[in-house]
Image (cartoon, rainbow, N blue to C red; front, side):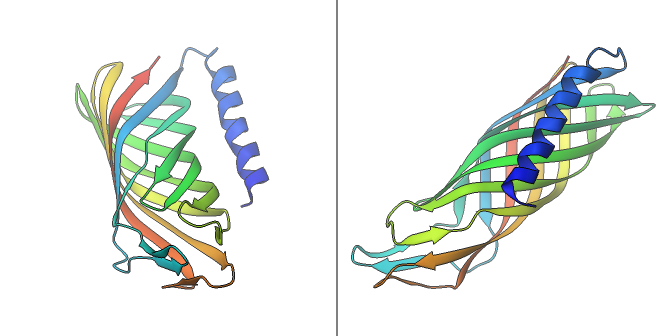
Length: 197
């Protein structure tokens, strides 16, 4: 999926959300995840060596993001589809992200919903902050995990996800990298709030 297809999909989700809100059976869903840590579980730290010396990525990324979409109740299940944006940052790496996520949760109690989620996450314009001679291609990866929401219409939201994406790269003269590509396979632990209106 290229960035144009992803952008069209994201816009469709947001337009459907605004139209569906007119129906009483649908909610507008807002997920705000300011506290997100992505732990690289691949094990190999990516590094680039150039005129400025060697720069290595750490195993921890931050990934604050926000998403908006629609949701509805189906008996004891709650289904929602959201699309959103954010940013992922490491010591020398940064990228804006777009995401589309489908969640299916069941009501474990009056104030607790838990269930699986799956989605696509698009890394738009990834960049190496330390050296202009390392360039990454945009990439769309997979997100699979589980989420838990606690509360009523405004809820605390926690999700644990596996994110898998691989970035092709190009380097300039005099720059070497530890790997021929950046393999970002990570465990994302996300904390935030959720609104259902």
